[in-house]
Length: 249
Image 1 (cartoon, one colour):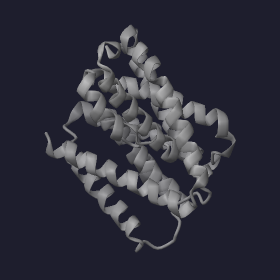
Image 2 (image 1 turned 30 degrees about the vertical axis):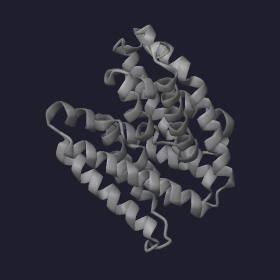
Image 3 (image 1 turned 135 degrees about the horizontal axis):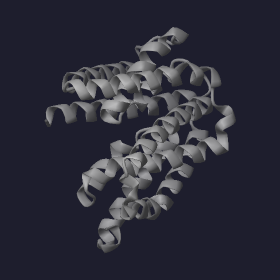
């Protein structure tokens, strides 16, 4: 239990969670990149995924309550059915086969794409609406397989939405709906009957709220170009984490 840890360990956990939610507040995804490795030192791994799902859901909904009117409803209507369909496909893949090859393929694609985008060589063009089909499906598949689909939606949305605040809140809304689905599944499975898990979320809630607040205010000070570079940097680290997960098996 966190309360039994020395203050140095508690400080490390709170710092990691705060930084993770600063990234979430800016990009609308990416908490697991920072928080999971640190939490895994102190908390059983089996608790980390449902813990972050619960916290991500509340973080997303806090942003939606404040800025939800800025979300691009057209993109949400395109992506949400595809996200659901992709999640069902991902669940079927998980039951039928080992998805390691998919993990490698996605990691290579994401790292290559983000490096290309960060290089400045990529042309300034938008994705067509039909690009929602592969991005929505693949994002759903990898959300179901690995709990990591946010960066796929970020690639698509950054090529569709011009205003950074609309892009951020649209991304956050998608993540909120995705994590809501996972939270419901965890709840039905009885995961949240563990009072210590709910207490952990409550203890870490101030760090989450401070991080989201700081991230939102950082976003307001960024130009769209700077914001896209932040998105592509988080996407790059997501790809590196995926490759690390593949090669560590």
